[in-house]
Image (cartoon, rainbow, N blue to C red; front, side):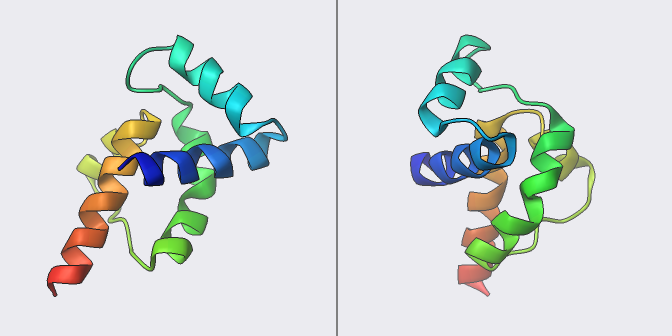
Length: 86
């Protein structure tokens, strides 16, 4: 999951025009879950879906996953694992 977390941070950093390391440090100051503005995560959702060839469902659980980088990465990992099982 750390790889996916790094990709999410890379995409967020690119979107915001900042360095990934700087963004990671900023997010880590917010807590273990790396809280992030959910609207910003939604902005990069399409890129994540394209990169990993998955679809993140638009349901309550997915909405909750956009509250932090780690939760979002976990949702992506779940979608990857579901795709591999089908």
